[in-house]
Amino acid sequence: MPLALSSRTRRIVPKSVLEQVHDAVLQAIFERRVRPGDRVIESALAKELGVAQATVNQVLFDLDSKGIVSKTPNKETRINRFSYGEIETLFTIRIALESLAVEAVAKNGDAGSEASLRFWVEEMRTAERNDDTSKFYIADYRFHQELYRQSKNPVIVRACQAVAVAPFAYLLTGSKDDLIPINYQVMVTDHEEIVDATMKGPTEAVAVVQSKLEKWLNTDLSYLRDRNV
Image (tube, rainbow, N blue to C red; front, side, top):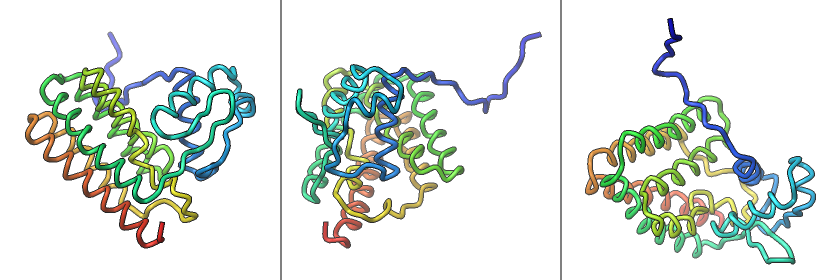
């Protein structure tokens, strides 16, 4: 008789070496072990992670395309730094692009699209329950990456990747404070509502995404204003 697993059993998602290196850099940012303007030494990072320097180089080029690092070929790579105005611009562009993405998912998505998005919502929920901030932010980041991918539109995907740093760009302002004191349970609910709206149709999906992004932007900007960033 076959083993019957509970419907609550978590799906296993294998990670490639590139994804693991990618997440290691993100985790260092979220844990404040690296700061805006810090130099990334490729050889040292490769040695620390036990991977080839060519792998690290490939990941850093990807992170450069997403605005997370600034990579100068044959010279150096540094963690990006953003001003208040740049973050505001990032979100303005993100609202427009992510609206297009979610509209496309609402029109072209299927049960697989919904399952993929809900997987990352559950990862956020698990991280919140475990009080694991860095894993929460990585799951948040992966949720939006998956949203872009599920648009099934290469142009939208490439455009959205350019503002992939937006959800945590405030960490790259140079502020010495800790993470924004947000309610992580509410953040999980916000993302769950995005999926719910997306499954209902394009009009509701776009309205909910725009509402959530504007709320998150206002939270970030209020935090930065209070610190004169």
